[in-house]
Image (cartoon, rainbow, N blue to C red):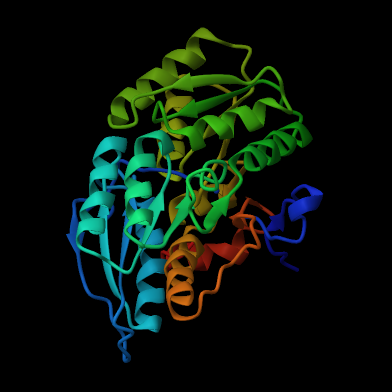
Length: 329
C-alpha cells in the first residue's frame, strides 16, 4: 500500500493550511531572460499579468513554477508575461518596467525583499495589485502585498531537522548555493533549531564544479559531519558526486524535487526531500490576481497560502514520481 507525502503541521494559527519548499538550478531549464508570451486559452479575460522571479539562467525549478502559471493563464484567458533575474536590483527593474506597461497584476518572488521594496510600492501606487510567491513569506505583509503563495521556510527547515533526527543524524551540513537569499538562510536556520550542531556551508551556485569541490573539501576536512542537506534538487545531484569523491559515509537529504531526485530517493541514494509544490505556487499566484481583478477576492485570510513542506521519502516517492517525470512536481 502506498501513502501520500506526509504534510508537516504548522502552528495553531495556520494548522488548517496544508504545507509542501525553494530551489534554484544552474543546469538546463528554460530561458530566464526577459521574455514574454501570450498563453490565452479559449476565452479572453482582457487581462495581462506579469510574473517576475529571481530565477537564474537555466533554473529548472522555475520551469515548474512557470508551467503552473501558464496553465492558470490558459484557463483564465490571460496574457502572461514572464521575466526573471537573480540580481535583486535587476529584478526590481523588471517589476518597474511592467508597472510602466500598466499590466493588470504582478506576481513576484521575494528572495531579496529589501531590493524589491521600492519597485513593489511603485506598482501599488499605480493601482496594480501585487502578490508574491515562493520566497517572501516573512516579508510580504510589510510590503503591502495582497497575498503570498509558498512555504514557510523556517517550518520547512525544522521539518528537515526533525526528519534527520528521526534517522539518528545530528550533525548535518546545510549547503547554501546563493548568499543573500533569505529563503535559503531560513531553511538552514530552521534545521539548526532541531540539531543545534548544524553547519552552514556557502558555495558558488553558478559554478557546478566549484560546488562539488567545495563540498568535497569540507567533507575531507570534517569527519564529524553525518549528513549533508542540499537546498535544491540539482545541487543535491552535485552533492552526491562530492560525497562519492570524498569517499564519505554521510547521508544525503534535500529540498525540492525533480524526476532525477525522486529516483535517487527511490533507490536510497538520498534519504528524503521536501516538496514545496512549485506548480501550485505559479498557478495560484496568477489565478489569485484574476480573482482579485474580477471580484475583489483575496485568499489566505491574512495568512500566506502554504504549498509546503511535504516530506518525500522511500515510502511515498512512488506517489509523486510520475508527476515529477511530467515536470509538475
